[in-house]
Length: 240
Length: 199
Image (cartoon, rainbow over all chains, first blue to last red; front, side):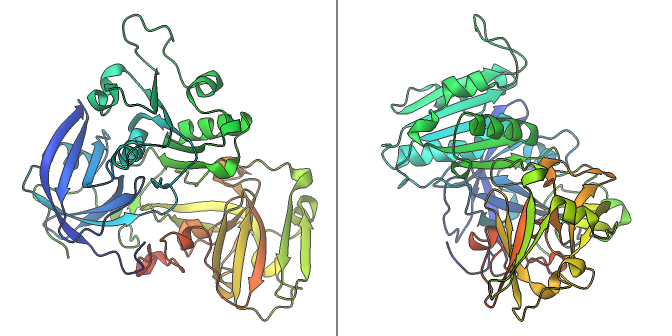
């Protein structure tokens, strides 16, 4: 990781993709970008014409490009701008990459369990993509809890079968036709069946809202996972 | 000033309050930590200060409770950009805990249950600047916020206020802690926006 100062860089929005009715993926062109690891995030700075500026952090959703997926927070200050106002060709300031802990490196040999709650899928998707890009020898299991089927990000990509990546969906509010698990929050049984067992000594990455992450991390510890192998990232309710 | 973001007006100007650069105001209390929340039974809890000579000073939970406490009201600034103002805590000043500690070392490496560490100069822990806090807002400190007790050093970014604090190790040399080793600033003064290496 570079030791120098993380400079603010000009990022130009070059592509937009809607993931759900309230979330979209933004691809930026950032001249001089130093590269990043799967799981890292960036700081985004917006400045109004009276000089007022504000910053937020967003996880990078891919390992090989500066791409973010932003969930609109209804009363947020920045996410409504990024999801509804920003257009291709617009520029903003961005710096990073930030965070050297919640990262997965393709050199990792241990099996990987990823557990996402809602928009917590974003840095975990970067890890799945990094695995694919590297040739994919490490076995991954993903548990993805979303409110409803149409609130899943990256749905077409995750639907494509990918050897060595096992995906389990959980829904908390609405389920697809014929789905046997009733809607509800993640349980120990869900983690037990969807994640690697503790004996395999997997690296576990858990990302989502605080309550979700607290609950899942506790479940993993209760299931015998070494707390040192459980890495967490929390999106608080104030992520806006 | 950076480039203007077309069509961005911003919300309030943070209610007229002066915040460190790049921070925004919150009224809830977000949780950030790198791993599972450790849970420490009070009968097994202890806090130690170990000097550079290896001399150890220990406090059990009962010992800590028996010490004079303070109720500081302080502002919190998290490196993830949120600031929370006017939070009230109860805890023991580090001045009290260091009273009988003989050390010439300039740096402190703070250890927490669960393995977390953070480093700071000793002078940032003394003279009424830091506490071992065990109550927040008049209630026992919840484990997700660092209970039973956490370090509180509010003049630095909140990652320096180690949750689940277990001890302080005095060191002659400044040894980077957990976040300080993976890209975050060694000192972390919010008013100078020292978020990351090189800031």
